[in-house]
Length: 201
Image 1 (tube, rainbow, N blue to C red):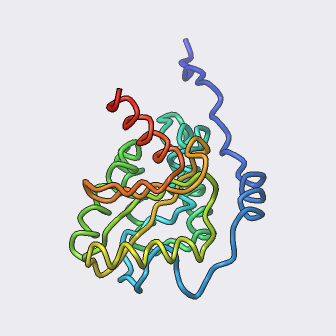
Image 2 (cartoon, rainbow, N blue to C red):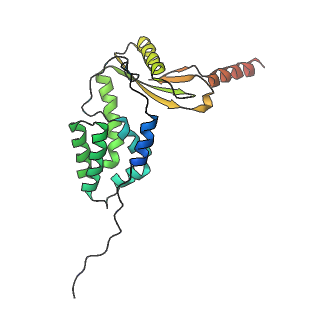
Image 3 (cartoon, rainbow, N blue to C red):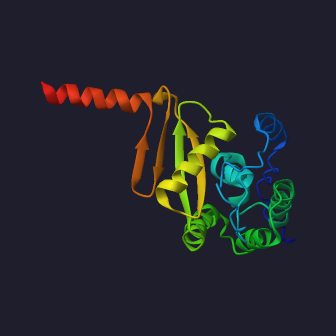
């Protein structure tokens, strides 16, 4: 009897990033010479993960599933990483490390690994990471001014902002860094007034 290898399910095709990239490029604001991310120039991290790849790993279910699927040929996964890496300008150390994760079937831990690395790197470079949640998307200049003020408050050498949008704030923004919070939102003001009225009853 002739032995035949069992048929395997058809391998998923690499996700098509074209439409998403085109949409993202239309939204991308022009870069400023005064970076809203760091209020002072910050040393380049050897494993700095470009926001484009961070977004793909965190928010794109099809890309995440493709890269973590054990039935997909590893070379196809590396081709996808290489393509995104070229477009994002990832350095060689980062690409090599991503390849190592793929080789050892550990890509599922990629996001957690880079988050842990970022924490250590920020500690070594005196970089304060802050989340700025606003009712509407902040302009580049607004982000720069917030970073500059945070630098004065914290005394940190560098400030890295992570912007987020929450329409529930109505207007204004909330800054969170370390164990501190600065609430300059309309929602925060209304909540405080409501609390004072309840306490006065």
